Image 1 (cartoon, helix red, strand yellow):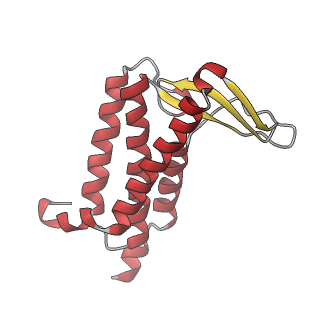
Image 2 (image 1 turned 45 degrees about the vertical axis):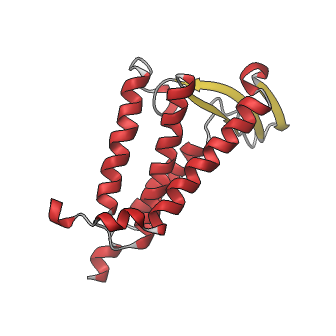
Length: 165
């Protein structure tokens, strides 16, 4: 990718903006409602439909499953912002709308988690799901879902642009 490949107008594309802004706003709204309004940060546990869905307050100072939690929140915030900027630049070179949507999902989720780090000092994870007699000890949040869905989408839709040329 060269500077000539970048198409800044693509940054204003609804295919990029709607998932990025929508994911960020949804993540922020749900986190506010659950962590603040329902006071999960003090209650620590709300049984919704046990064992399938429980709201469990978990503060993640690292990446997935707390990996890299020894790094500061500033480092993780910088990683989120820089990777989002890189993904946005990459999205301006894409012709495939589905891949652009996937980048938007990742960026929305990354910025939602970066917001948590700025406000709380850690990412607010609270969704805990278990099934079939297997107890899941981990919690996640909507931003994580958007990041995961976007990454899976990029993998699934890889090669579409090559096939179109």
